[in-house]
Amino acid sequence: MTDKPSVLVDPHFRRMDEIFSPADRERLDRTVEVIWGKDEPMPADEAAAALSRARAVICSGWRYGPVPPGLRAIIDVSGAFPGGLDYDACFANRTRVLSAAPAFGPQVAEMALGLALAVGREIVDADAAMRAGTEKWLHAGNETTAQLYDQPVGMIGYGSIARCLRTLLAPFGCPLSAYDPWLSDGYLRSQGVQPLGLPQLLAQSRVIFVLASPTMENGALLSREMLEQIRPGATLILISRAHVVDFAALTDLLLAGRFRAGIDVFPEEPLAADHPIRSAPGTVLSAHRAGSVRDGLWEIGRMVTDDLEAIARDLPPQRLQQAQPELINRLVQHR
Image 1 (cartoon, helix red, strand yellow):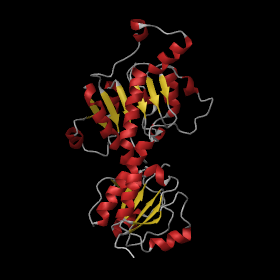
Image 2: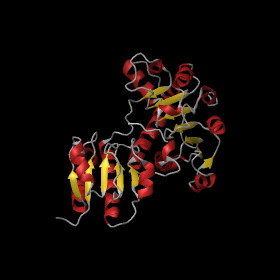
Image 3: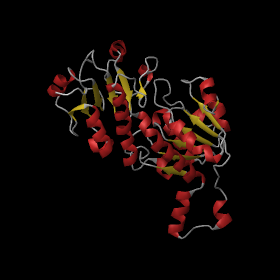
Image 4: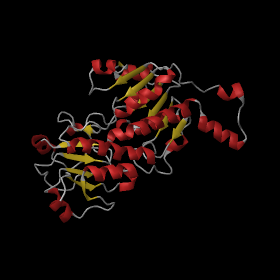
């Protein structure tokens, strides 16, 4: 017997060593009694029996039926909130539903900045030209490049990725603006970010980062009409979900050379081999790689264990993102 709280640890599709560093796995075992803790999914009958004594569940999606009233926390390590869950019952029972989404903030923000620099300074095209022997040197090679320093930057969505990105952008001295209808203007200003309407942000920004989570309201938010507001020569970085963009319109405008882009997410993945966006000029493409860095994934286990240490002491978790009753049913779940 143990005085440690029991926690059902069933992270499949993720692996234990993918999300827990050796140090955090040791800390997890010191903090809680781990039930299961294997890479393969826990058999349904064993999971049902374990739920009766579990204080928390670590999972990638909810597949365990009704939520036991004594459960303190459900922690999803996929990067989203779990689908198929009775959130009303969770809120009524004071079961906290937590997402590991904040663990992805630093690595995705880093990739967003990298794409912005690669696009603006034409790093990928210049490398291809060097390899082909068609490079242009010095001034001739910079006729259409653009610096990031002091340029106006707009963020569509101001969540954990945007907050990490703001820190990375600080040395560049960029005036920052944001469009996020789920946040008050006062909060955005307190973050050092100027709130703007979407058309104004698109028209004024030299670099635009699309960071919004997919919701019931923002499907194709960046319609053709909105995308046409982007100033010539500006850069659009699509790093959250393609759900937010009219991707056919984006493809047309990029093929026409209206503006530049760095894109890490697509409506269908893998991207079709003959998709026309593969030949769009001024565009850097990435195969949904922003959030799959090993060291970054270990941040999931670090945050999970931090919050389990709090839960074990009957304290509120602080590190992971908590589902809010006003917003949870407006999110679109992705895996």
